[in-house]
Image (cartoon, rainbow over all chains, first blue to last red; front, side, top):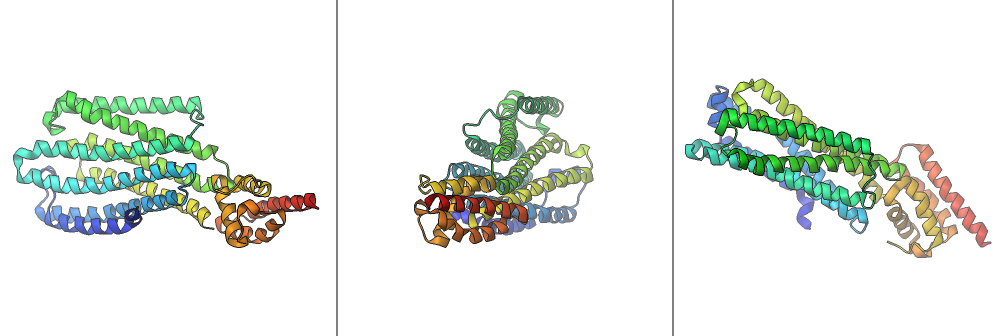
Amino acid sequence: MKWRTHSVQYCVALMALYLIASLLIPLSRETREAYNLSLAQAHIISFITILPLFGIWFVAFYAYGLLQKYARAIRHDEEGVAFSKIADGVMILSWGLVAQAFASLILGWVGDQAGGMRATVVVLQSYITLIFPLIAFSYIWSGTQKLLGHRKNVGSLMASRTLLLVFAGIAAAYVYLVLRLHEQSGSEVSPLPALLLLVTIIVPYLFAWFSGITAAYELTVHARLTRGLLYKRALNLLAGGLAFLIVATIAMQYFNSMFLSNLGEFSINAVLLVDYLLLLMIALGYVIVIAGVRGLQKIEEV
Amino acid sequence: MSDIRNKTYAEAVKISRDYLGPAAERFIERQVRSHLNKDPADLQPHDLYKLLDWIRISVSFLSEDADVVEDYVHQLRKLASKGVNSNE
C-alpha cells in the first residue's frame, strides 16, 4: 500500500498538529495541582517535554517505514510475510506513542472542563495506553513465530524457564501492586471495580507483555540460528533493537500504571527523570532497529 | 525465485548462504540478471568468472572485513574452476 511509504511525512504532520494542540491546551488541572504549577509554568513544562517526544516519534516512524520497505523488498520469500507482520507491529507501536500523547492532552483537558467526566477520562486513557501495545506485540509475536517456522522448540529449556520465572515475577508484582493501590486509593487509581480492572486492564496487559517478551526472545533465537556471516550481523542488530524496544515499552507501561497513579507522592523531578530515562531507552531501541534494518536492506540493494 | 535445478546456480547460492543467509538466492539472482543479463537457470560455470569482480564490489559495500570478502570470492572462484574443468 502506497500510504505505508509515507511514515515520516505522517510523523511531521502529527508533530505540527500536536504542537498546535499543546499550545492551545495546557497541562491538566490535576497535574498542575499535584505539583503546584501555575498555568505559565505548565505551558513551559509542556513545551520542554514536547521536544524529546518529537525526537522519539521521528525515530519510531522512520524505523517502521524502513521495516515496511524491507518487508516489501523480500515479500516473495517466506521471511517476507514474517517481517511484514513485525513491521506492522512496530507501526502500531509507533502510532500508539502518538495516540497516547494526544489522548493524554485532549482527555486531560476534557476531564478539566467537565468534572463529572473525570472517571470516564481515566478509564479511556487506560484503554488507549493498553490497546496499541496489545495489538502491536501480538503482531510482532505472530511474525517471530513465522520466522522460527518449523524450528519452534529450539530455545534452550534453561532460557525458557528463566523467561517464565521473570515473567511470573513481573506479573505477580504488578497484580499485587495495582490491586493494593486500588484498594487504598479507590477511584484515584481507576474508577473501575476490582474485577473489571483485573479482567479488562490487568489481564490484557499481562498478555501483551507475555507476547512482547516471548517475541523478543524468539527474535534473538532466530538471529542466533540463522546462517550467513554478513546477514547475521544486521539481523542481530535488528533482533537486539526490537527486544530492547519491547522491554523498554513494557517498563514504560509498568512505570506509568504503577507510579503515575500516585503523582503527588513523588517529586516532579523524579517522575520526569524516570520518564525520560524510559523514553530514551525506547528511542535507543528504535535507533538500533534502524541500524539493523539498514544493514538488511543494503544486502537487498547491492 | 529462479530455477534452483541449475547446478552452478544452486552451488553458488549454497556458498553464498554462508555469508548472506536467506538473502543469498536473491543476491545471486540479482547479480546474474543485472551483470550478465542472463536467466539464472542458464548460468554456466565460466559465467562465474565474469561475476567475481562484481560480487567482490557488492560484498565490499556490506563488509569492511577484506578477509571475509576475499574468502567469499575465493569459494566462488573454486566453484567456477571446478565446473569449467569438469566440462572440459
